[in-house]
Length: 292
Image: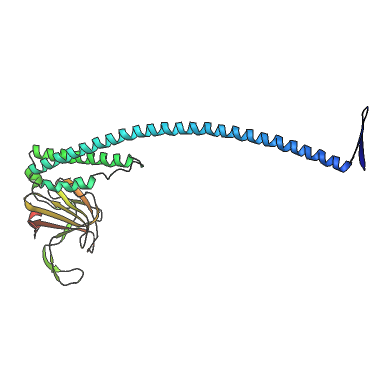
């Protein structure tokens, strides 16, 4: 089927024939071209709008990040300053404790162990300061307590009594083994027993028999959980086989202070405290001191 178009002028006449199929095809093609052209224009404008909106939000986020960084830097500076001040106070307390210890006839250099034990590790500025502050404040509180105790010893009238080695290392219990040769409880062979054993119940308090500085607080072969305290005049006392330890290296302890809890650790056959007295590096019989 064809469609004929006639154009008649005054002098000329035009006649053009076109099939219906061709006419429909041209109509559909022109419609598609118009649709694609219109859609493409809309997409471009939408992309431009989205890009502008994204840039706007990105600028806001950038400003917020910069403001947060400024606040964080300011807070960090304040916290570092406060922590430095606390460490300075702790150093002054260490110095004062050393001076007081010398006045009591103790070795001031032994207090260096305390300083090394509580000195804070280098800070990680990406982490939290809560742990650093808590550790330093706890150290200051403990050091202040020890200094107050030392000052009372220096200024008071009981310096000799506090520093004099005497009494038993337990508040309750009984003497179960003496100093000297005995049958080893594990091998049944003769062996030297360089201390006294005081038996009791697990968890009973183990007490210091004189004021001094803790030079060991932890596990040691044979002794289990051991506390060692240095006193004036070259004396050292040891308290072995403890269930738990209540002091740390560098702590200043008073006479009668609970330093551990009786236990059955190490080379032991039951709950007791193994008590040794050492003078100038040599073990001596503790019995005479327990009767004073």
